[in-house]
Length: 45
Image (cartoon, rainbow, N blue to C red; front, side, top):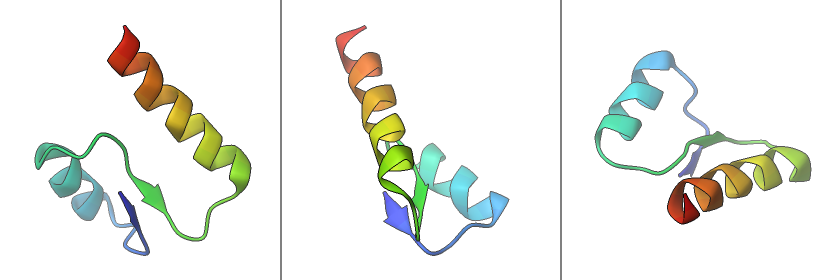
């Protein structure tokens, strides 16, 4: 999920709702790659 909302409550709500990861805009290519790697690692185990 990408969003401009960065409060702790928003992040917790999103994660509890089932999003795989949460990225606050603006973000760098490095942060995006780290998030992709984390989701990929979780899926492939």
